[in-house]
Image (cartoon, rainbow, N blue to C red; front, side):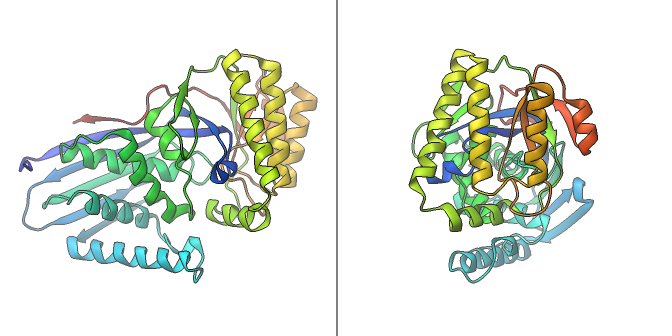
Length: 348
């Protein structure tokens, strides 16, 4: 039975970093990822009313939209039609969600299919500490924040696997094909061994000194990078098998807290990412200098970029903060803090 009372919730969703397995997780390989303390915040307020509207405030884009229910439903239907065009290879993935608000609308649509959104006036405000488009799971943060809010508002008992399946379906509208690793990591929190077909496994938090280095927004989208890698390397089973072996080596090193083995695994992973063409030459040179100047290892996290000089964020393991080299390249560097809790929602 649906409540007719006003309700308000505030949800906080951590960001994610992939230690190993970006791209290869789409080819039936395992991946290792961690939730980090950079948060997307979703504030939601429901008021019973006969007017049936949704207001969406996107603080990071300085945008505010208000739609009557028939209007936002029609806009979401248009998004689904564009996604079908993409699946039929009649349009590019970046045309499916052409505006920031589209991700919110398509998330509301899929929740409405899963469980009818109750009638009334809805207000959602989303703001984020997570740099957008850097490989930190900012899209998944918005999706999981909205879904978690709606679950709370409708008093539903939904397990994480069900929520993950729904989030994965929605994320495919953003990236073309979602492995599910981003929403899984930020739903569960901590360090996660992920496989698209098997049960996820959580590991203990790391004791290594690690840094998040931002090389700037990639010049290609995740969808474009995924598409190019698939078209050039999708059938190379030997390559994906090597990715899988490297990920297993990193998982073992992490479990044993073996720094030397971990560093070797990260170097091998970065070399494979360079092989599939998602590491710009400027970033590859920077990573080589990290090794020479700081005896550090680093790798691209997320999809990287298939053009331009920027690759999004890097995960760097180093005993010393590589600040001088980052300053030389114009990159920012911050210490990584693991978020052991996943998505959380509190009544306001």
